[in-house]
Structures are given as C-alpha cells and as structure tokens.
Length: 177
Picture 1 (tube, rainbow, N blue to C red):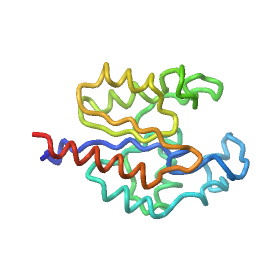
Picture 2: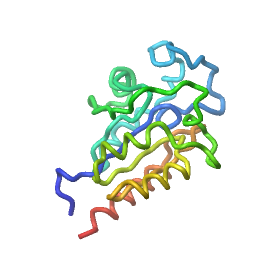
Picture 3: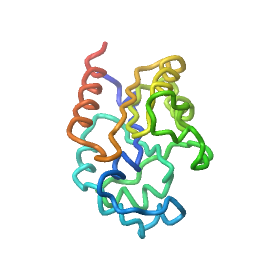
Picture 4: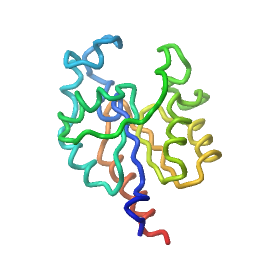
C-alpha cells in the first residue's frame, strides 16, 4: 500500500479532456476569450466528472494552458476544490509543433518535461488529448517512477473507458510492495 505522502499524481488537462472540443462543438476563437465565462464550450463540461475524479486514489493537479484559471472557471462547474496547478512554463504559440494532435511523428509536448520534473520520481498519470509516442518515450527514459500517459479523444472528452484505465492503473500501483 502506498504511503499517503506518495499518493500518485494525476495531471489533468482541460481542453479536449474535460472539455470536449470536437464533433458538434460550436466554433469559438482560440484567443483571450477562450479562458473566460464567455466560452460557450464550458457548457459541455460534465458535472459528474468532479466526484469521479475526487474518488480516485491520487492527487489531482491541473496540467493545462488554462493554468490557475482552471480553478476559477472549470473546478466550480465540476464540483472540484481548488487544485494545485502544474508549473508548465510559457504557453507556446499556436503554430508550435508541441501542440500537435497527430500521434505519428509529433514533437514532444510542451508539458512533458515540466510534468516529469514536478513528479520528481513520484508515480503519475497524465490525462490529455495531445499525448504522443514521443511523450511516452521521453517519460520512459527520464522518469524513475511508474507513469501512465493516457490520451483522451478530444471529440468526446473523458469517458467511462478513460476512468477505467486510470482506476486499473492506480489499483495496480496499490498492489505493488
């Protein structure tokens, strides 16, 4: 059983993970109005996700370009308390290849190095719609603890399948000596 101090981290993205951005989503500008109450996509957040995330045996941490705004605009809609925010550094420009949604040949995500640094060897799961094989390979080579990098389908956001993957991974950790 893991000591509470060693509880795994769960790094949580917003856009495409908690906030579906594909399919029949209304068209919105990816500008400064994106991270405000004026964003019509905020209505797509599922309040059921909050209690389900809180029930996981891990420490939730925002890992999103929303940064601290996630605590103001997203957390209350999900019934989440204020969460720690991962220090991700400067958000890259929209044309930067680290924003790539292509799993094949994509550049390392702008978040990957920062999340590994913050985990500091602690087990972590990362839920994001932009995780690629490059991110998985980098984490495998640079992180000394267990890690689950799980890519969420941006068109749907978190689904039952995604929660199952995380719960099973966490269960596997708790059964390790």
